Image (cartoon, rainbow, N blue to C red; front, side, top):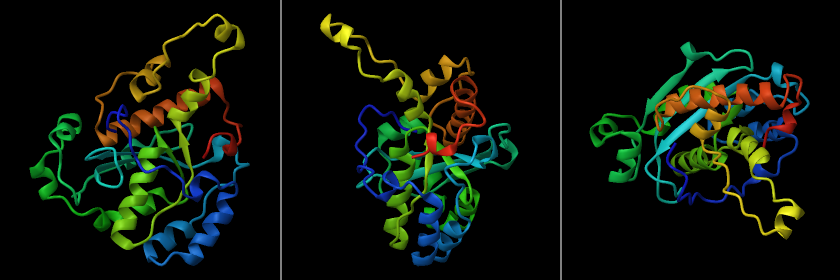
Length: 249
């Protein structure tokens, strides 16, 4: 995932931010989606919000992009790692480099190390939908910053098949924000105290749980890192019995 300092994705204002009954929403989308791949994705359904986390099938997802603006940037690589709270299925993970419709920028190449020669030989994202969507179907998607993965996938499908995509996510960055980005207390405000915000980016978040440091900005590695982070967050701050609706968005 690219550095978030200059994040300017399209605001995630679709119904994905407002849905409370995702199974019902998926049932409706399975009826209205035109693309057969999307129909099949929605037809798999999604777990109920009352489901305990320990029973929920998950898939950690990360994308690397040409930049951070969904109106002009595109996905260049995707990593998916199937998982549950108890097990990360690394052997079943997948990684794709895809050909964006926009030019690679030198600064993005520096970050994710995907070069022009690599994308010249890569398929368009639409060509991998038959593999990607079944890997995500029936699972709750785990990401670190939903404004990247969900927004960029939605924009990519919209530009290719004329339909976007909706799905609930567990956002490990948002879970860290709940703990570390609370408003200052009244006492602190009265004293005029200002504290430096705690970083909720992926690597610092992992470090707080004493998870190992991985190479950043590789989609598959970041997906694995996100999967491990969620497991640590649940072990330390939630429980396997926590209902899904307390975490998803």
